[in-house]
Length: 237
Image (cartoon, rainbow, N blue to C red; front, side, top):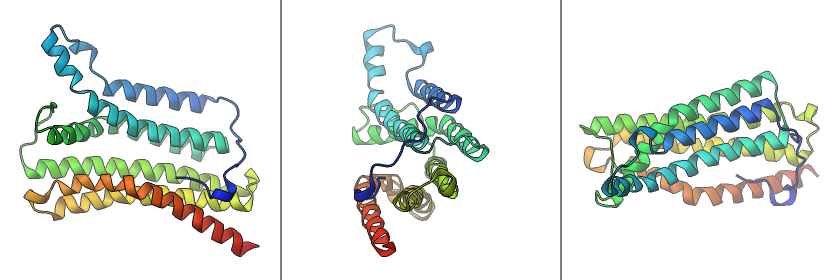
């Protein structure tokens, strides 16, 4: 998500490193460690090493998703510097969901790379039926929706305190649209869950590939934010 093109330079109010930001960074670092190869499974042979390295693509993709939400919180924290009760609770909620989300996240990417590689990349997780896959999609989709909703809620929390923060008109508009954009991204998780329970078994995989559409939706969302922001600013003049 991005600010309107004519109002990108907003003040950074969170200049100091706080306990909340330190806690959040540590929590995301720990979640990243959970994605990595377990210390109890250190390869002892060349074959075990090559098998472990095949887990790399799923790890890298999962890490990229975690970094996306870590960066989202970091940007919000630097921009607004809020540490009120509501912001703290929302941050704790974000961290909690991230810690729960890591395993479904890696399983989903593992399944995707396993499928795309024709089984060459490993998947240490078995599904016994189509309903098991529907359940996995539902768990993953729910986590995806909640994560995006929490980031959106952080921006709404800042927007609610727009007067106290001294936001300019352009920043208020951008803050509101930023929250709306995160909610829109989260709606892809809802769409995936609906498809998971609506599609028959042979077409069930399309419920998972819904998230690929975000690669196209992301730039569209940014351009729409910029266009709407400029229009609202022009209307207010």
